[in-house]
Image (cartoon, rainbow, N blue to C red):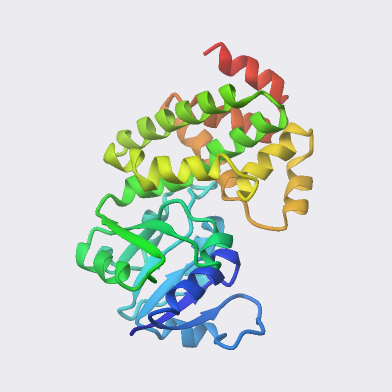
Amino acid sequence: MQKIAVIGAGKWGSALAYAFSEKNEVVITSRTKRELNNFVTLGEALSCKYLVIAVPAQQVSQWLKDNFVFNGQKVLVVSKGIEAKTGKFLNEIYHEYVPESNIAFLSGPSFAAEVIQALPTALVVNSKNMELASEFAQMFPDFIKSYTSDDVIGAEIAGAYKNVIAIAAGICEGLKLGKNAAAALISRGLVEMARFGISYGAKEDSFIGLSGAGDLFLTASSTMSRNFRVGLGIAEGKTQEKILEELGEVAEGIGTAYALYEIATQNELYLPIAREVYEMLEGKSPLESLKDLLSK
């Protein structure tokens, strides 16, 4: 049994705190005080040997700058996304604060609502330090099958990119374009995601496994997905601000879409679905985007 501190008490952080508590002593903290038996201050959480960090991707840089001091902690990052304002991957951001040997990244298909019900789930712990990956993998409860991988960049890109494809899938659903169109969109989204990842040195296997296809199929096919619901809102003609107000939660695909658009523009990369999602978030008509996608 290990003592683990979960940082971030949103749905995903809370679900993982529940999961890890089956085999470990778990405490949890967040920006605002929560009435939880295992709630502690941030200082107490950071003093733990094992940290599970669920801070949203767009907030990570500022949170690390304001709060984090490395004292040998072993870190598992469980958020997914690419920083919109810089185009940095999470491993690049954390690299300034945590040695590569002390950090791992979680990936795979996993709705918080099902994890907190102890329903069967499979996840991947990714790290350049395979001993650390195995260490974290062994901490998961029996209802979560955990795998390990050293393809950090592949897991990161898959976990971030699938949220953008999920927005597109939600738009497809909202426009009532049918299952044929949805299948085509998701499968081409997987190709686009993999092509992008491989250009950064990711392994192809990561995109046909749990981190890629598994997470994409889950997120792009259910209203349990926040990003899918963003797409539904766009299809209804709602503004980005209105969608987020109604959602009441972070949708990582929005920031990632902006990041991918900037990366594609600067590097002349062909990312047709990600580009159209960005354009729709900026106000382009979904039907016009559909027309443009079909012509490519």
